[in-house]
Amino acid sequence: MRLAPRPRSLILPGLGLALALSSPAAQQKPIPQLSPPAAGAQAAAPGRPSAAPAKAARPVPFQVGETLEYDVSWSQFLTAGTATLKVQDKRSSSGSTAYYIYAEGRPTPLVSRLYSVYYKADTLLDVYTLLPQRAAVYSDENGKRRTKVTRFDHARRRADYDVQTSTLVSKPLTLPQGTLDLLSVLFVIRAAPLLEGGRITAPVTDSGELYTVRAAAGAKAAVRTPAGTFSAWPITLLVTDSDGSQVDNSIVIWISDDARRLPVRVEAGLPVGEFVLLLRSAAL
Image (tube, rainbow, N blue to C red):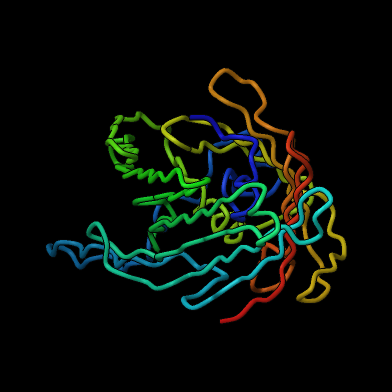
């Protein structure tokens, strides 16, 4: 299944996005920040075995308890739905530690009469590598329920992908190094240094398929939202499939230029209409 040009592309901020931006020197390279940083360790005394360096968690601008709420507009609907993005907790997982992050989106009662949909995505994002361990998306579209789960094995560059409807379908995947899922990528963006003109290419998997995202950072500008006015970077994304064909039109994410690196605005023109997400509140 491809990234479909349906409201889900923007109801959940970050779904369908995959990149990390740094300086222009990083142009057209795989994500360079995804290996665990080596912790500084003192040299061992002669004749003594050197101690294994302690792991150090990646510095990130978000923390457990962060809850972001968005208003979603679509075409002629000024408020077509709402979206929530939350860092729920930090837990032991897969022999490591991971942030449990979820996002959910739903339409307003008026829009749901036209198209009833509910989406919830979650991911376990390793605190040391900022790579996903497991990612899942649950959808309910007019009563058609589906759960998609991807379990990553980055050391072997593979993943297991399952789709659960009335039946279970499984598919093994071979992945490029540093492949991300559709929710964790937004947090990778926030953790990356942003510079005007920065460009990078990153792999992402969605629904058992592989995509490539090419992203570019523009000049900072003021962005007005219900949560306030922010100085923010516009990050323009171009998504292509395995054949190199463009998927949907470009998407722009505005990331605030402050310590929290908040995604304050998301906008895209899709075949089903123009979508805009605006930050309504940002609580810890």
